[in-house]
Length: 212
Ligand code: DC
Image (cartoon, helix red, strand yellow):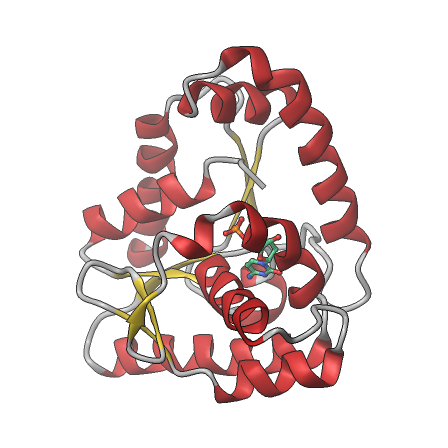
């Protein structure tokens, strides 16, 4: 969480002329529908049904559309953010969304392009055969500092750091598709890098992969 992965992936997709696949937005969109319908986030079966039924797509700007309605900005709201970890831990929810992510990528490849996909299980579960796999890391302190700056409230950094550590522990400890670093993925530590440098570095890896 808050490693700068969305910013980096979005900018990279733009630079490479590829579709950006924001998988976190998909889990958030399902959570939004779950909450709207009054479904309990702890109810695995009901959440799975929502994930299987929800029609998710990305518009031309890469923004998620849920059942023909824009998902932004609600999917970034406090309530969804608070519940999304729980909803995304259900194996049935993950199965449904992984299938969709792979279908989106397949369609892009068949159209002669490809995707820049971002998410905790991209390198391990969803796209183990991707041309380039990157594991982006940053220290909790640095991630908290960036988030607080983004929000224009640098004094909140300490509180964010606690929150981030809690989410890390939860995402790494869950049973299904925990956050793991896999062999073959390139680790990029962004602590002392600017956003542009991160994009340069990954674009370089993509260039190497094409050449080799
Ligand atoms: O990246 P984000 O903050 O938008 O992700 C929101 C939540 O969705 C996060 O708590 C974990 C979950 N998620 C996931 O389990 N697997 C993914 N591929 C992407 C997100």
